[in-house]
Image (cartoon, rainbow over all chains, first blue to last red; front, side, top):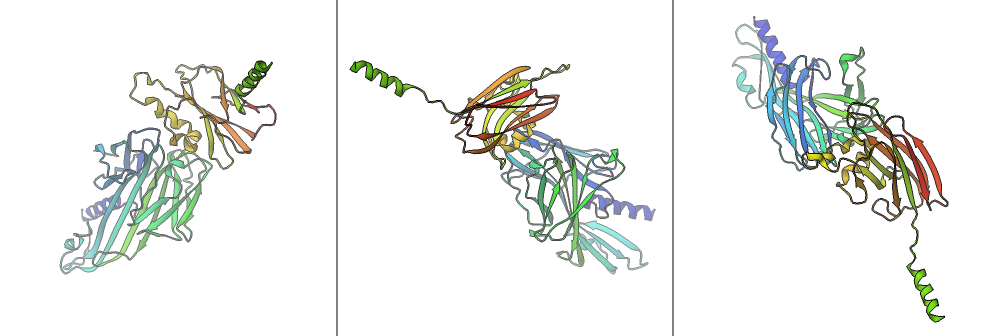
Length: 268
Length: 173
């Protein structure tokens, strides 16, 4: 019973914080990423084993943020969370590139109980994690976590993506609306607004259910934090990167885990 | 004698000068399918650096047919290369460039240098592109390189395999 609870708590934490243990793929899937005129799109959100199939759990939408080309926030509509996926509609009225992201920030604590030395775990926000650790606990380990799960959609002429400067994020040098089979695209990874050099980025094409080899590609960012990809085939791609550092503001935390995933559409 | 002389001078000054131009003949193929829609089509000229010198024609659903305002422009993005090169920077319709979709058959697009379709071209190499996309159908692009200015009338042609038939380019000095 206790083991099941601990496992449930762990898997909940993993689900919320993204693929910390690379157990599952977390992703957003927009119905379109390139539009000729202002129109609606719908976006699916899920945690799954295959790309891009709903076969595990929905992605919670409580930390969903949509930024319009002019920097304003766009409220999602008709949001629903089912058994296997969440979904929401977006009314894209402005010309330019929209940034659609779920930003999960939290903390994760692990300690040994004062009495029997049993290992306990808890998750919470950066502010309240300390209050979840009981007095007398030993071997306390606190980890901060920031995970960004993102995608983009462009109406008409693309606009520049403005960096948030926080956590791990992708800065497209090539607009997400300009990804074409056979053409090279360049991106940069930043941590807290600074280029992340030597970071491994994994890129996997969707439709993984219909082939034997995952065929994921791993590229490393250069000194400028940049990397390039020449897309072998049109389709939806999942991009993922993660890193750890000790730049955490949480008391007792030794480590900060940063994860980033993006869904990018490559057209033929 | 004096009157005849001045009349001759006046008629010489009034005579139009022929600007160089090009003529593009496009064959929209006859496709036998249950749900057939006339293709969207764009014809444009690119420089070697992929910048666009001019859009010669855009055929799309101009009249909307009772749909919401601007519905016809919704599918312009399916002319994928044109859309990325220049289409998304333009505002449709454009007088002298955009028009309704065309039925199966031969159609000709004329463009003279110095018009809204084609500004004065600097001497050099260019490429004509013709791209077609059909609703509930495919998409195809055909290209024809050419040199400018044409010293003499020149013709070249290429053929699509599915959504475009023969595309012929005629340069007129």
